[in-house]
Length: 267
Image 1 (cartoon, rainbow, N blue to C red):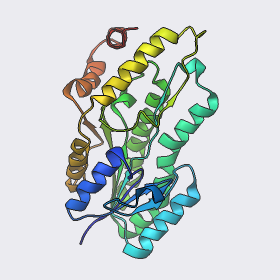
Image 2: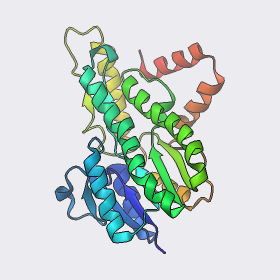
Image 3: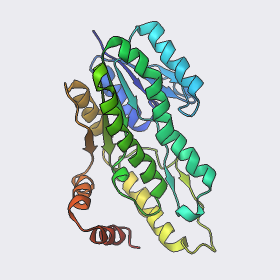
């Protein structure tokens, strides 16, 4: 029987690559977007869903269940970037980012758990970020939202183990996607004390995305996770140095690691 997969944010970038790869492997895939009409040429159905609006989540989940009668894999991929000096990012933008990157996945998980419990099976994959393992300058809000989702997954796994439902984190590094275009950028203010270091860091971040890895690497990694009988708590996908940075944080003194990050970002 073909597994039924729901991918939030499946219309572009990593989500689209995952969906197209899984379709080729014989999975029944549904993606989501806030504007599905813009993706009529998708290789799999794109349904209307905004992770910040619980009614759209319920409607989409019910639509899939009415047609497929089951839901085997849910990939919480929808996310939003945000950059800027924390002091200068409006509170509303910080809350909006957490609504998408943290509370959004929680709402999706709550919507699908009853069905997975009924099936006595299911897998939930939360797409986090290597940035969620460390507080990065001028990406602090993003790091915090993804780091919070990592920890939430650790707790969730223990709470749902009796229902034969699996959950895991997959943390990508920099991939060549259009995430930078949709990211909230705090404006570069002429009178800001952060103008030069923030501007330099912003250029460096955009360069990393432009030169990022092929999103198909994420698709292949997700496929392996789905095939695993007992998924790990955490997976990291990206270039060696990005993954190794997590190891370094674990073994280096905090101030040494901080200095290393500051040297990298030239601040």
